[in-house]
Length: 216
Image (cartoon, rainbow, N blue to C red; front, side, top):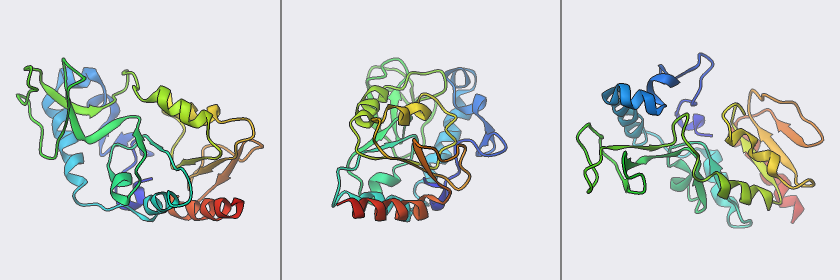
């Protein structure tokens, strides 16, 4: 979804995220092993947010709120949906502009600057990125499932459909609910269940917007 804004996908074709392996920067074990590297990695990602802007796809989703009840469920950890104007956004995998206590995870703070070893919550616990790493539970998953189960239409945008449990969300859509899958290199084929749109997020969303407007 955010590629058109200049943000790399979580898992590129070479298996790396911004030239780092997932095992280096996206697991609790990585943080225990080398907290400086992990914090430096997310500091760079956070800084990048000040250099990018929402793209046309983000804006289309936000504009659709004028006509429809649009619930955005994203694996992205950037804030581009919110900056585009979307008001109902669930971040399954956390948010770059937030941090939380390592020992008291309910203590979550907004954060714009670099995070360092030694930065602690009010109870003395080291702060870490508010990111759901591999091997950790996805706290918002149940809420996301409930939304999909009651959807009138589901649009899946720009995902490899390889990262679970998020990749299985569309399977919770009601039987007669249309499901659109937008991706320039889709990992599945169109079926009775899923209509594949092999385009970028922005171009694919234009098609979906036209379809939605023709239903009203």
